[in-house]
Length: 486
Image 1 (cartoon, rainbow, N blue to C red):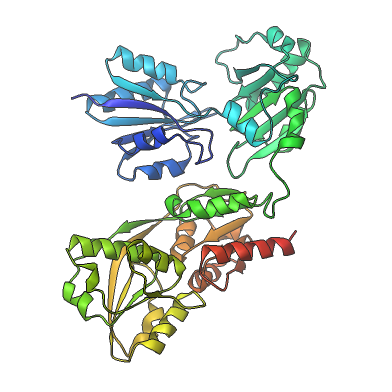
Image 2 (tube, rainbow, N blue to C red):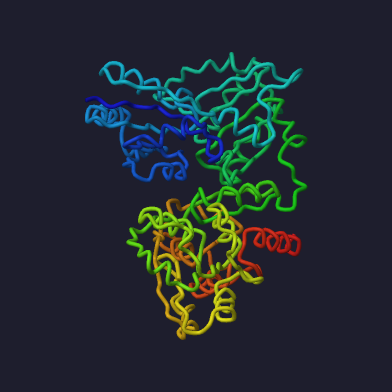
């Protein structure tokens, strides 16, 4: 039985610029064949799918286009549902048309899922409208990377246009592009811009004129992926660009925990003006737990170290058909996220300390639960075992209901000014692929004391931590830090 191939446009880079249809399609694929410019966050949408990288960069191809075409057919003939993930839109210089034709020739079922093209999204993120009444009534998207020595671009026609010119994949050819336009009559003083890593947390913008934009780009260290914008609309960026009056404007932040657990926090950071990228250093997976109903009944107190402990403990109860009303002991949590997770399951008597961290939660247990009582500690596979030594006068059972798998999926941290760690495992996962040497003096924001200890132990020197272990407290601390460092 033949499978099916989906040619999916993944947008220009910002993880939020992806369609709902793209997300739902990725989640049903057996294999994901992806390009260099596809944000690695999207691969997390389907953890079970096989991943095959076929990325290309200037002068370096992991597979030729013919090999990619053959791979799509091969996988489909094996009965697989294939997600072919392409940056931007598949049909805007994405060679999606070539792949679709090859699938047609071999009788393979396929479907096109459009994506937001960088040719309009990247200028928009810089405050450049590609069309504007009385300024530019058209825009033209041109490849900046032609094959062969003979150009097929009508430079004389482009030079005469009053509309906006957008060149994709043109940074390597920027001298040729600007010189050809000037030679064909385009004004040297025509406004121009080059934008690198458009819509991403590390977007870089360079402005100038047709005459000097190539030199300015070189001086700024501009590399691929970049787009070139030429036309009078470029001037508008100074008036309608990003709001620079927000408290975190211009601050580049990387959050290192899984995307689905970081979206709300990232939204708040972006609202405050920060450029934010989520680059997971860990992901959470449930453990198989054979939960004993008698253990739940007999426990006088429960201590939860994270909201994932709550989530997977409740799931384990369901899997073992244990009624939630079996929980009769006192419930303690390290922070408000645990309390909120319990409330989603209709349990409203979780107790959290005023100062939200593990040490204070343990003190709360010791103050309110009689010595010798049975305490069930629900946690993950990682964590500081020494934290529980002060509970040695209790009948302790530790139940590990989830595991934290460490390791980052992209080396893109150097441009960030602030790194956010929400657990010791995030710190360790970060160091799996990064040397501490370069990052030693970066500003580090940790959610709590145990994460702070781990960060300091591995060699970070500029570490701040809020008094409460919560996202709101981290935001407050970050705002205070920014005010004192402007």
